[in-house]
Each structure stands twice: as C-alpha cells, then as structure tokens.
Length: 575
Ligand code: C2E
Ligand code: CA
Ligand code: CA
Image (cartoon, rainbow, N blue to C red):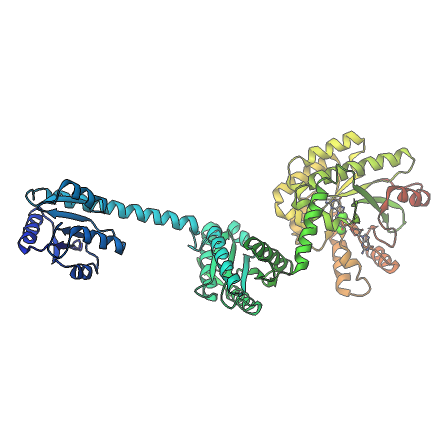
C-alpha cells in the first residue's frame, strides 16, 4: 500500500517562530505534512499553485492580512480549508472572517484547539468535495446517456438551440442527421441486451470517428442517434458524413466470437432550408430517415417538401380512418373464384374498400397497413367478417347461392386473443354454416409465432371454417411446418401466374406448388389469372380453382349477383 500523500500546508505568518509552533503542535497531534511559510501577497499567490490542502493564516500582519488572503482565495475560485490562527482576533473580526469563507479560527494562546480545528476543517472539506462530485455526476446523468456517455436528447436540444442562435447571427448553415440502426431490435431480441449494448458502444465509437470535435452526437433512444453538424454544414458535407457513417457501420463487429453486421438509415435536414427551429429540423430529419428505410435501409436521404406533404397526408388519412367503420365508409367488393375445369362459381373473396369522402375508393393496400399501425384493424376485420357472412346469407335468401366466401385476416387479428370466439359469434349471429367461410392467412403471419398460429388455426378448423394460405410462394414457409397445419388450400401468388408463358422459372414454381398441394392434400387456387393461356396452363398442371380479371374483377355485391346469378344458377356446394 502506498502511504497517503502528505498534506501540503501553507502558513501565512510574519513571525517564523509562531509558524514553527503551529508545525510542532500539528506534528504532536500526528499530522504528516509538508509546509511553507509566506508573508506577502505576491508569495501567497505564487504558493496557491499547486493548490495547498490547508491554509493557516495570521489575521493581522505588517504587509498582509488574513482577510486579504481570504479574498484572494475566493477570487481564485478555490475551496481550501482556511483557518485563522491569530493572537488577537476580536469577536467581530472573527465573524467577518467566517463570513468571508474561513473554516475556523484559533487563538494563539489556546494552541490546543489547533489540531481539532484542522481535523474538522479537513473532514468538512472532504465531505463538500464528495458532495459536489455526486452533484456533478447527477448533472452528467441528467444530460447524458448512461450507456454510451453521449449527450441525451435534452442536451442535444440545448446545443441545437445555441447553435441555431449563433448560426442565425453569423448567417451560416447547420445540419441535423437522424441516424437509426436497421433491425437493431432483432439483435437485442435474439442475442440479448448485453450483446445489444456492446454493439451500441461499438457503433458509437465508430460514429465518433466520423465527426469533428465541435459536432454533437447524441443518443436519443434505443437505437436512435442525432448528430448536429455545425462547421461547414453544407449539404455536401452532411452527405459526406452520412456516407462515412454508413460505410463505417457496414464493417462487421465481433462480439463474443460472433460477427454482427448492423446498418443504419440516416435522414438529413438542413438549416435554413428545411426549418428554422430545432423541433422542425429534428422532425424533418426523422421523416427523411423514414424515407431512407423505405428506400431499403442502409442509405441516407435528405428531407424534401414532398416528404412533409406525404406525412401530412398520412396524418389526415389516419384521423379519417379512425372513424371510418363508425361512419359506414367501408364497403366490400367480391371477386369470384371459379372451378378451372367447369367455370362454375365456387367462392367469392371479400375485398375491403374505403369510400373516403374526398379521395374516393381507397384500395386496401393503402389503408390496411395504416389501420394495423394505428390499431383499428380489429374493428375493420370484425366488420369485414360480419358483412361478408351476412352477404352470403342475404344472397341465399334471394335464391343466389354462393358456396363460400373467403375473408382476409391480418396479422394483428391472429396475434390477438379472441379471434376464434369472434368468428364463432359472427357465424352464430348470421346463421352462416362454418364450412361456407374461408379465412386467408399469409405464410409470414404463421411463421411469426408458429405455436400460437397452430393453436388458433386448430381452433378455427374445429369450428368447421376453411383455411387457405394467401400469396403462397412469396413468404418463407417451412414445408415441414405447413404439414402440421390444418389447411385446405394454397393460393398461388399472382406474381407467378402473370409470367406464365413468359418465364419458365415461374412455370416451374407453379408446378411445384401444385405438386406440393397435391401431396399435402390441399387444393390450389391460382390468383391473378388474366389470360386464357394462363387458365389453360393451370388447368393442365392440375390446379383446381382460379381467380382473376379473366373471370371477373372484384365488384359490389349487386353486380356479382346480376352477373353470376344468371350465369351459374346452380353453384357447386362447398368442399
Ligand atoms: P390479396 O388477398 O392478394 O387480394 C387479391 C388482390 O389482387 C386484390 O387487390 C384484387 O383486386 C387483385 N386482383 C384480383 N385479380 C387480379 C388480376 O387478375 N390481376 C391483377 N393485377 N390483380 C388482381 P385489392 O382488392 O387491392 O387487395 C389488396 C390486398 O389487400 C389483398 O391482397 C389483401 O391482402 C388485402 N385485403 C383486402 N381486403 C382485406 C380485408 O378485408 N382485410 C385484410 N386484412 N386485408 C385485406
Ligand atoms: Ca387474399
Ligand atoms: Ca393474394
């Protein structure tokens, strides 16, 4: 163990003998220290560097005074225990001294008190130091991210506002970069938070090498960073920095013996072009970042007015969509599915449309993802199920019997509990036999949580409902897994069908799907059949059912009824 460094004591005293007495006294009390005596202002100031640990000072001296020594100390802004040791300090002067920052005073004719006064002054000082250290740490944490030690959102906003004020005055430019790591959540979820944290630290380290000393890099959320570029913040420079960050991140990171690759999407907004306050600049950089994600991630995008309009449009749409079910703005179109061999109607697929008061009929591809995002897909899904089932019963009553109706499910509907009860309730309410309802799910929905999907599909199957896999061939299904599910049909995705006659690869895939269906005991439904040659090919290869413009476009219920009631008065019964 290294011995504690000796105290450095500065004695301000014109009488060498008095100084010696103090030293002896303290040594007697067991203090180990180095000391130095001064008696003028100039020597005193020089002796403050490096700072002593303790000052013992006379009050009145011929060329200097304790009060002046205290004032100078305060002027230096240093906190050093300071004890007046005087032969004659009066009560009032003593109060002045304490007020000016002296820790204590000791009368020369009562030297026995010196040791105790020193001990107390030192321990109070140590406590103050610990306190201010804790305070500094609290301040730091309030403005920084604990993991990366980067500034947090608050400090970033603060720096941004200051930078803006300066930039405005000097008519300069600045840039804000919004950096979001791609698929970081997957790393956290699959490899754990420790690996996630290590990755974040490495990402931070790399990003810091891409920026200049006066730029501010802040971490504002799990995998979100903001970067403020202040000097030479032209579009060109911002693009260079963004490009450099992307480049630095694409190099693999080795953590725990694994090679990880994390990429980033970056959005850039510039002052003054893209906004003149901090909030707007950040929001616009954020929008641009989303555009970078849309563009396939691992790239950067500049904010544009069009992005803003897009976001505004989306917001307006969101608000309108929230009330769409209640305002009766949804309607269903039905698209016939026909038996390839006989051309008879075997089913209709219900396809939802939103009759938007301003935009007209909005296709589901536009608003279903939005509905999923804002959490109204449950209401919409329930409405579609209810309406489609009731339609079949209505048609029955009018003597137009459609064997089956297929309804699309969304991921959220499968994920949420209560789907089975809901379906069963709707079948009860409408009186439609379960075998006349078919539910379409996609491979990706099933794969997300295989155990849960299996339970839900099993329960639906137990009700008697038919199940089909939509857009088959486009997802990642494990064939072994498909075998375990109680399915009835595979719907061959239209992207394969549309290339029949043009792309032999797609024809091969279609043959394989039909063969797979056959071996699993499933029917195949070809989607997007637009041409007679496609229908011929599919029939020849052994697919049973077809759907597409070649037969009929999706249409409102009355139109389906007029066209198909006459054309197919006796529809085949369900499977
Ligand atoms: P999907 O289930 O694959 O539906 C087939 C889509 O292909 C429909 O588009 C249909 O109009 C279109 N289509 C049909 N025949 C042809 C053809 O011969 N050629 C071409 N090019 N297209 C054809 P739509 O109605 O715009 O629906 C798009 C998607 O929206 C649907 O794809 C489905 O995933 C989703 N969707 C529709 N209705 C609902 C619903 O009620 N709930 C949920 N969750 N999703 C729905
Ligand atoms: Ca479908
Ligand atoms: Ca489909």
